[in-house]
Image (tube, rainbow, N blue to C red; front, side, top):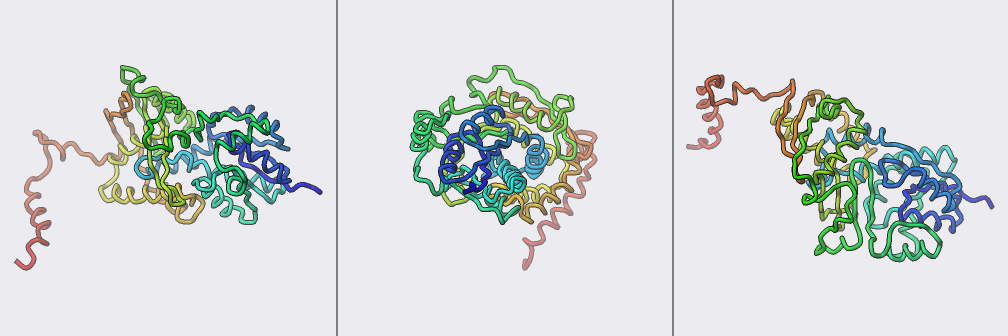
Length: 393
């Protein structure tokens, strides 16, 4: 009997390595797809590992450019920040992975797709909502929701029993997802809120104690909300992000320890590293403060929170998110300017900011001799503001 084709979103980590074996045992012909969004694994390593694990075919696609241009940049313009701490690195990658799962399934005439997400995590929701939005006819298999393995320790034992090569050990059992926008780290001893994060868990960043004693100055230039230059040199968005990860990581920028609210209703502890993301987020925020009116800034805060929530919950391909994208594209036309920072031991310190669309006027703000603000305006303005307090008196 001919086996049914199934496309597995494959990372080469513990979960998907075990999934590959388990799905084959269930009678599927497994075709692996790995999206290179800036993973810790090299493409050739992924291909070799998947083939050794029994995959009939392996697709590895370098999607860093598309990820940067169509996903990261949209979230950056929105100022999307979940629970004031998380810049959505993993959440942004999932809809892009789902998009190519669907494309490959169609090209291979496969009726099934699968992922290695846990039954209580966010990523199962993000991937499956995206697949159902793009190709509702596809059937989704989620091994971690149905197999007999009940913990990462049991997965490690399963891997050893089946000669599956994995990086995780019972002493270092973190679950890690890495892309160019950041690293997500969870599980193991991090689940105990009384434990501090060991330095060995971090990938991109140094601790503040290990950061250089000398600060480093950094200038970023934006054009319509897109970062286009670092220290006056033009650079592609993907390489710009990768460059800032190195610079920011060296100076201990971008570590976050968050007890966050998952989509499924539980709280979990997540450790994030996002040097480039935090630098760019703060830089663009400086431009927004400079060029937007008070009303626009307040409304953009509402948009930022809603955009982050939609992205976090997996609603990337939904109508409201697409409509917000149209608003953000239009409202970003004046987000052009330069910001100069000083990076020092985990701190991003603003030195200068400028824009040809700046609404800051020194002649109105100054208390010096060149003050052009009419003091006579103030009394009438205050009287108008006071009207509600005088009613009935």
